[in-house]
Length: 122
Length: 111
Image 1 (tube, each protein chain N blue to C red):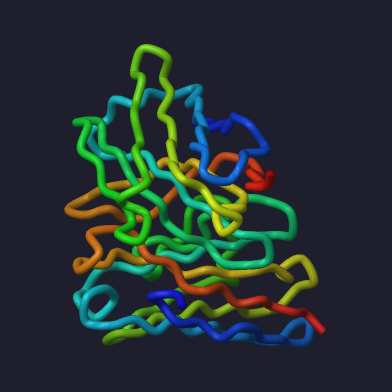
Image 2 (cartoon, chains in turn red, cyan):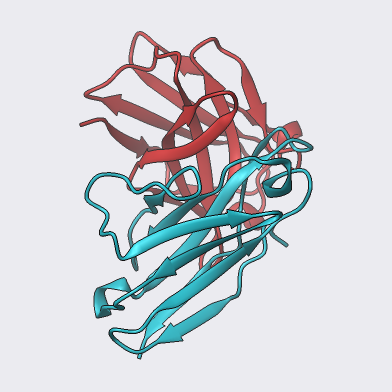
């Protein structure tokens, strides 16, 4: 069964870049029916889609974050990453990586990683 | 402000039936994009509950069902159990944003 695991610093200073990595095990990043995404959840709040990368390398980002987000992929390590620049306290959240199913357009996310809390504070 | 609108909370007694609504617009649910539902138990990651409006992944009890009509969708839970107490989120695709959108979440309390 495919598994995803987020990793990275739990504390980031304001104005710096948040960097997280999602390691995929028991499966491959290179599959035409799937995409890979990042979703976040501020403490006590709802889910927010951050961005998506396809096996082709195409990326799509939430317009509200687009100027600060990149999602690079390293197929040799079966990993994809999240880089969010110029962070503020509003970026404090649990960050999830997930696999998405695509058929015609992006559909559901399954499975999800366990999530990692990133706090932005000096 | 979430793109998809859900009631903040619903409640029901054990054994009862509850529904959770998810209202979108002409650029997402109304544009015939499918709706998916997730269950998030306290302190855990969301888990796929319903996909493509009314399909259950393997292992999800048939007490959970989904439907969609127009610009809205609904999740129904019958035979409520204490273990169903969780947050529930709807999700779809939005053509104007070219990405996935979530509802704000609904907290289900089993009385």
